[in-house]
Image 1 (cartoon, one colour):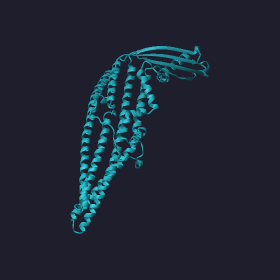
Image 2 (spheres, helix red, strand yellow; image 1 turned 180 degrees about the horizontal axis):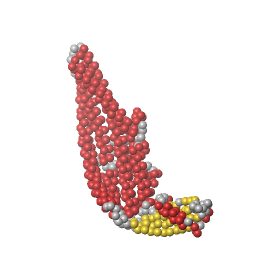
Image 3 (tube, helix red, strand yellow; image 1 turned 135 degrees about the vertical axis):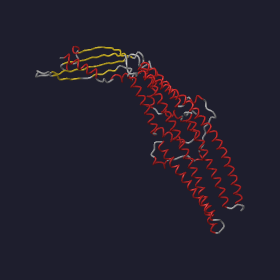
Image 4 (cartoon, one colour; image 1 turned 45 degrees about the horizontal axis):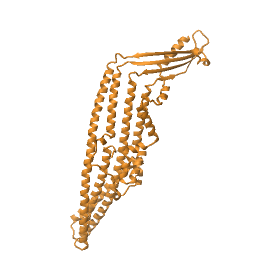
Length: 467
């Protein structure tokens, strides 16, 4: 009877899932034969202790070129509070845990159980208690390094996730800078537009008064009124755009949009970018872009996956060890006379799988070709984006210079006309109308100055913050 119970317990235990209790503990130990794994483990632990890597991602020193502590303060808030960035960092940890899970497959799996049983046979009035404690150790001998290659593949995914995280930080920092500067621009535009509206109201009042005296036609008066209303509409549009950007900035820095009114910013006239913008970019900088590096990692991963698919055609070698303690009373369960132990090994080679392994190999080869083409496309896109940014900076800078010259000439012209007004040669109405040309040109200067600064941020993003 004991032999029957022993056989049933052993069979039930072997067929059951065995928890890899020891695999996790062993997996946390340092393996001197795998320096890359040690490096990943150490770097990941450093990430959890310090946020320094986040500031390295965005090249924090570059943002100091704006000489605006308010802007750098918002970028710092975004780094700490932005939920998109938090998700990107959590995703990196998910890939890290996937490495540990896969690495556990390279280690022996061990587990145990405790199974009490009460047995009563027919024809007997009394039953017996039996206590069993089986233990099983199983190890797939990785002589072909198939599991080891699978771990390498997962590591490449982890390294790729680091580049996704880096891209997210660069993207959010760029968004904060661009939105912030556009808010500053709209502050200036609103201020200038308010002057324009004020002057148009004066012009309309003058036309209205002259129309009552029969000195101006009703058509000209209506035209002045339309111009005044149009100016108010433009002012309202500017305020709407500013409110939307304030809400966006709140979300970027992890604040409630209801706090948009509390967003402070620098005055437009105090903006002073002190950085040096290069006229050309070395190809080495392009190779440091997050998407470029990730594309390289994905090629390496795809190559490893092809190698693993080939190894699926090789046999699997398993080593197993079983120990069973069986006794009629729990007190003598762990004695040697009640112990049963066995060691076994086996070789498994699937002979027919319906073409699954061959199709899997072709699939991995196709994936490799796709990833390789993505790498080539990423390379071309990187070059295009950098060249586009340099071209935009060049032409926008020229436009800004020309517009500043135009604004200077408009002011000089206004000065001459102001002198004519004081001499009684020019009417007040004509002088106010000439003043609007000055204010409109000042709006163009403000718009193009901020556009140039946003262009610099675009180049910063295009080169992966490596300026």
